[in-house]
Length: 401
Image (cartoon, rainbow, N blue to C red):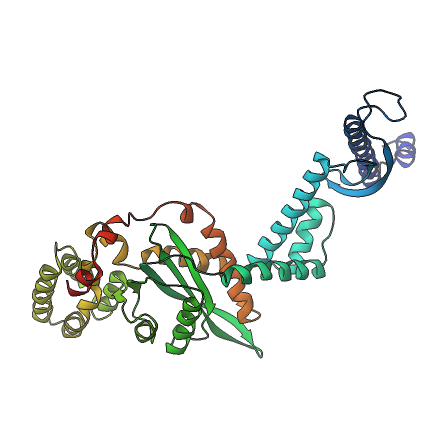
């Protein structure tokens, strides 16, 4: 490199940051000028004439303006929003701005509820919108959404719900420097119109009788009625709580969970064979046929020297056969807790990124927020069962079947 070239390099120094800033200012200036021109044009259209123009078509006049900031992809711009003397100036630009504000709030809340740290939320907002949202803003947004979630969680339950599914999820929370378990109990139901609904979600502390009793009492106070069948796993204290608050309801033990309980007493090389045996029980055409088949399966399990599995089937099989008392067209969807299990898997996926929650309430809010979202999708707007068959079947026939 010769002397002249070195001299030229010293003279011509390109500052990329300054150029980007300058270009950004130019773009922002253009965007700002364009938007303000559009606002003026809208105001002229509402007035029926341009500013200071004398016209027989004029129906209003200007009354000054006020400043409004707007976040754009080019950065923050200042708008001069016209004011009119006789009408309220409502512009499509401002409406889009309001929707943008709302969408930003929803995005911030969604990020936080999904387990993104407050510091990370601040970084993301700065990268996306050019404005860094403070941790105080995120905290205030959370308080706002918590109020909405609480209102939704405590809303009245309208109509009757013949089928109710219950389950719980265990999450981690930090407590006095230690990580402990916290249970969140969830209920969904199928209404008399055949549509599914999230009935309730509540912190259970432990999945025991006191937790389930409190949960069922909470839903009964909100109006849960018309319950004919409760479908769940054999959770500790759940069956006793159901009998206390809904004594006329049957209890259906989830067939899939029952199989898993039996498999825990079966060697791994025999699980597939035993699974086929158990499925044969629940493939029968009637309750009597299923009970007869279960008796033969118990004898066969004992012949295979699977005594504990045989005892479990003999003692508890009838808990899995309550669905036979209901319309055959409903059997597939009421003999297991799968409708709720799929939702619980989605909740586990969303809460796994959080790790340990700071407290039980934050865990409850995240689960409730996800459930509220699910309820508003096709899940809750698509008919799940045709309930006419249940309406035609008297309750006395169901109980005595």
